[in-house]
Image 1 (cartoon, rainbow, N blue to C red):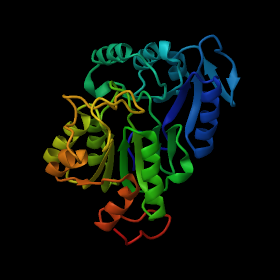
Image 2 (cartoon, rainbow, N blue to C red; image 1 turned 90 degrees about the vertical axis):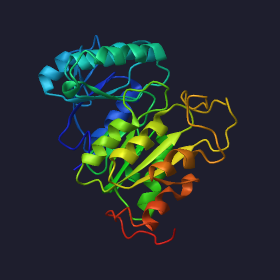
Image 3 (cartoon, helix red, strand yellow; image 1 turned 180 degrees about the horizontal axis):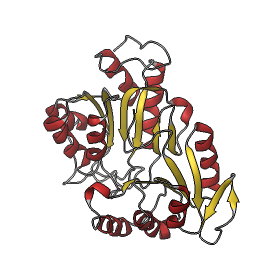
Image 4 (cartoon, one colour; image 1 turned 90 degrees about the horizontal axis):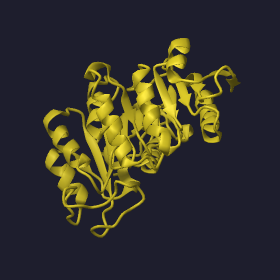
Length: 308
């Protein structure tokens, strides 16, 4: 099994006919994702990539039975696109767009609260790499060839550090159930907690890698939840060890503040060790930590490296 998506998940692409959306939709189709159509206002009735194009998400859902979407919508219109997807009844929307105003995301999150929790649309992103269930389906922009099917879940704020973890594990013969990039913006659609809870319930996920960044309380909140609720082993890494206080890094959310993770010499230790998680101080040994402790079982690409 996996979380969020698999090969049976019917997917549409918002902003379907755009250049970036077209490129990544082709990659998703080639990977095996069940892409059933797309949405570009004003181009309804056309065909693109041998799939139908619709003017609205509601029309696309009614015609195709779609349950998830990947959104490539420009920042000024992204908030409205997310709310449209929720109104159409999609259970999952992954939005890649960078630069969405924080106020727009606040409006989206308030809007989603009108729906009951059990039927509320889950938003992954913005400013994220997306979601991949290895060997099954991809809803994003990641390189699918670095992921092999296995039993380790990955949740990361950073897309590229998620790639790094997947590549390290592949080299060690360790596979992935699902990898989720929640995005680096200060206000995102879903948090570490949302996805850790799904991984805890997934019978095929035997361990989890959580990759955070400096800035914001999410990593600290996740560590407290792990201590109280998580039975599966968690390997954690928080990027930004040497950043001076107040320095902004690549992601909008990556800034050390008084309300965020405290800034000791080793920020990963202060967040994860009290919760019983295994922390890594260098990204290049994320995979080895889990393999060395026997937490992460073999994937389909070979046997794990025994070095720690």
